[in-house]
Amino acid sequence: MKTFLIMVKRNTKLFFKDKGLFFTSLITPLILLVLYATFLSNVYKDSFLKTMPEGVIIPPKEVINGFVGGQLMSSLLAVSCVTVSFCSNMLMVQDKVSGAHKDFLITPIKRSTMAFGYYISTTISTLIICTVALGACLVYVGIIGWYLSAVDVLLLLLDLFLLVSFGTALSSVINFFLSSQGQISAVGSIVSSCYGFICGAYMPLSSFSQGLRDVIMFLPGTYGTSLLRNHAMAGVFKEMGNYLPESALSAVKDAVDCNLYFFEKQVDISTSLIVTCLSVVVLIAVYVLLNVLSNRKIKNKR
Image (tube, rainbow, N blue to C red; front, side):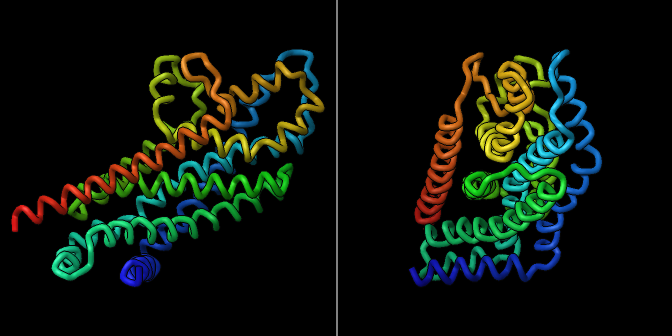
């Protein structure tokens, strides 16, 4: 245990000591918040108004702003929890590039201790950065329209931890196969540019074709995004219930992926939670298996 804690401390300190990597990871979610608020807020407002049937009373501006703020916040956090995890987990690959990984292998440190040391330190670093991003989002929502309860904020923190665990497990599995700086840059660019689309953060699934929606529903990140959506917008939906009929409110939830459908069957929040948790467990199991097989391969060579 002492060796494990030393590895976690060492990896965490190295991440925060690398000012370029740390500030890039920290500033990226804040820049995304500014870009989302600047360019996407009007798009989200227009999309909301288009879903309103004729003759329905439009909610006040403050409610619409709260709706947009919740959508922006959930989109930002859904992407950041995964992309920042990849940035934080780059140390695992950098140790291979620098030769530090080989140095560890000739010491009495167990390979499992090394593997989980990377995982826990990445989780800690990513949680710190994403919590700061959540704080900035809450400030933004507080300015434009606050409808969150204390329970909603606590659930958002739980979602944050769950999505960070998922992002760290996913990055650990992928980064296990990387061994050069060029591969790090390539994977980072692919994840940053593509993940937001395939998890439904940048564009709601309702805007995709039915076939593509069915495919994306097999990806666990979709369910994590839906969890954030539901908890970030629960309060504003409750307020909207004072102005909109149930059918119109349901249509709005469908439009922003608060209501997910797996082959026409609606997926409830508890199912989304179970799918996300199981995804974390499966990815961690794959990560453990990869390390076990790699350790056996090394022993056979000896």
